[in-house]
Amino acid sequence: MTSAPAALQLATTVTGSGAPVIVIHGFTGSAAAMAPLVDRLKGYRRVAVDLVGHGHSPSPPDLASYSLEATAELLAELAAAAPDGPCHVVGYSMGGRVALALATTHPEVCRSLSLISATAGLADAAARAKRREADEALADQIDELGLARFVDDWVALPMWDTLRARLDPDEWDASIRQRMKCNPAGLANSLRAAGTGSMTPLWDQLVGIAVPTLVVCGELDAKFVTTGRKMASLLPDSELVVPDGSGHAVHLEDPDRCAAAIRQHLDAH
Image (cartoon, rainbow, N blue to C red; front, side, top):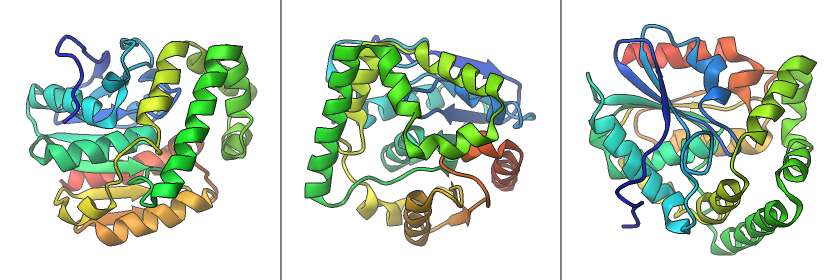
């Protein structure tokens, strides 16, 4: 199994007390980007992490440190050391894929899963290869054109249209500033080693995940609604929630409803 160097540690932001909840952001995000959700989960010990290459976590040169398997090992160590464990695990987008990898390799540290706009990967080998090529091209863009140009192009993608529409100008500008704090080399390596095309598909393992799982996807994010329905149909102990009027970043577009669904799931388990 691929593992990260033993000295590598993820930066965390810990708030509150109670049963532990690990919160994992998406690509170009950080613990700070998950604050609207974290702030609404009071009554729990919330551990928001910065993934490798993001926020205040290291950005090592080796690609192996960025793989989902390596990240899952780091999170397993973090979760095993948490008081009052096992931990609830909440993951958004790339963070949801990390959460799934953790649940397949270390279910003993997971009390529950909440997956926001997540996928179990690409089952088709040709689709994975095409995605890897696309992610490599994006990584090269960061290397060649710089972080500012990449972030501008990234947030111009259609998947962020609903988020831009729901945030006020100050909130949108704050989200851009947060993304700009990421290490450009770290983001490029994350694309190369932890993109959907690089991950081992987990679809065949979903039926064996006994951890109670909540699947959340925004109604307007059609691709991930289809994916979410398929995941929920395979996970043996799962619930699907599809907030209307929201897109990919449902936890930011409709934080009250998203957090309420997650809180109900945490309280039940």
